[in-house]
Length: 120
Image (cartoon, rainbow, N blue to C red):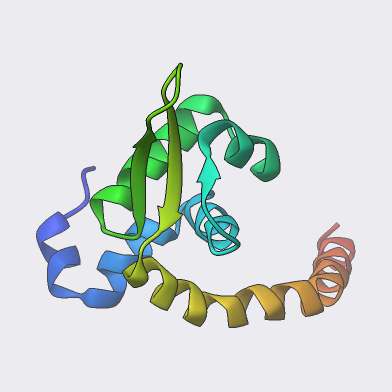
């Protein structure tokens, strides 16, 4: 069943979470917060993302104004991605979530293991 995108537009949090709530967008933005990055370098540092999925993710982030794309005047031409000022304001807010996740991941894994053991 298709999503009601009209409802998403009237709810700011749903609208933004639809963009950044996928598997890759936040990882891409957090990496770009370190500085400009070319496509292949970004793909290497993120890891398990496919070339197609990275391209789609970057296109969506660019469309929403979080990422800027610049074609560098090189031969062959190369593309560099940067976080926009709008994207930087979002990353500032998301950094706390990243820090929390890094600090608490072992506790989350322990809770999952305990739950799975009880459920088995």
